[in-house]
Amino acid sequence: MSHSLHPHTNYPSRQAPPAWRRLAWLVRLFWMFLVLLGSSAWAASSNLVTPLEPNHHGLPLVKVQLQRRDGDRREALMLVDTGASISVLDQSVASCFWEADPASRGQAGWVRSASGAPVPAQAIRLHGIECGPISLQGPSAVRMDLGALNSTLEVPIAGIIGMNLLARQTFRVDFRGRAIQWGAGPEGAYVQELQIRDDRSAPTLRLEVAGRAIEATCDSGATGFLELSQADAQGLRQCTRSQANRRIIDLQGVQHQASFQMVSGQVRLGSRHWSEPEVQVGARNILGVQAMWPRVWFDFKNNRVGFSMGSDRGLESRPGDGQTF
Image (cartoon, rainbow, N blue to C red; front, side, top):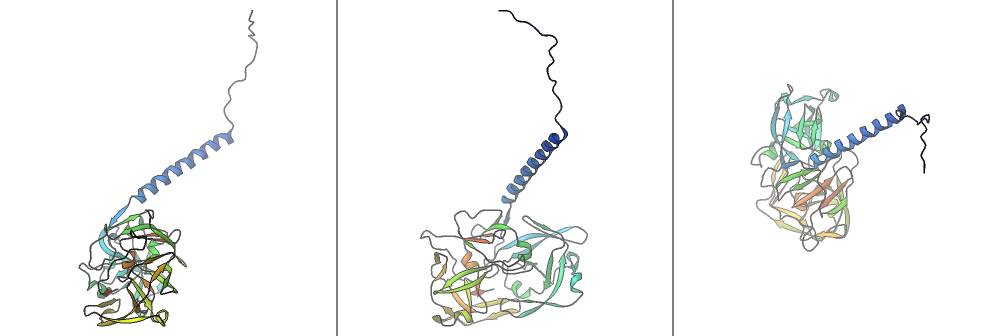
C-alpha cells in the first residue's frame, strides 16, 4: 500500500481570536476575580468576633474605635442597642470626635426615652467609628446625657450603637460566651420574621401574651424579659409584686420602685414559648435581653431573628435581676 504526499496542500493557519472574543474572556476573568474577592471578604467578615465587656446588667457592651478630627483613633465602650433608632454619643465625649450636623442648623432636638418622655439631644455627625465590620465616616448620631445609665454601670459608656449603624448587618450575640460573631448563621436557633420599616427603625416582633397578640420592640438595650404597655395589659390577669431593690433606669434618671404589676400567662413566639416568663406592665411593649439569653441571632439584611431553644424545645431565658433599663 503506497502513500502519496501532497506538498502543495494548504492547511489553515491558526488565527488570533476576534476582538469580541478576547473581550468576553477578559470580562469573564474580571467577574471570577470579583467572586473570589467577595468570597474572601465574606469569609473574613464571618470570622470577625467582638468581645462583650462584662457588666452585671448583662447588656451587650463592646469596645469600638472612635475617630478624631485629625484622623487619630481612640478606644471607647459602647452599648449595642437594637431598640435605639439612632446612635448616641455621651455629652462627656470631647468635641474632637464629632461635629454638629449642618442639617440641624444649630436647633435643639429631642429623643424619646424608654418611658416615652422627651429628652433633649443635639444632632451631630461622628468623624468615624469602627466596630467589627462596621467602618463608617460621618454617620449621624445624637449627643445627650447618659449619666443615668452610667451611674449604674461598673465602667461608663461613651455612647450607644443604634439601628442606623446596625442596619444591613448579620450577627450573633452570645451572652454566655461574651462575644458578638459578625456574619454568623442561626445555628439551630428558632428563627422568626422581624418587622423593620426602614434603616432607622427599631425591629419589632409579633408575640402572644396570655392569648393576646401584640407587637414588641426587640431591644438589646433593655435588661428585662418583656414589658407590656398598660393598654395591651388591660383585661389580662395581673398581680402586684414587691421588690425593695428594683430600679427603673431611664435616660431621664434612676427611679426606685417598691412594687410593680406583673401579667400572668404564657408568652408564645410562633409555635414555641418561654417557660415562666416575667412580664411587667410599663410604658411600651419591649422584649429585652433576658428573653435573648444565652444567644440571639439578628439578620437585619433579611429582617429575621433567632432565639435559643432548650432541651424541651422551648425558648430559653435568663432570670431577672430586679432592674429595668
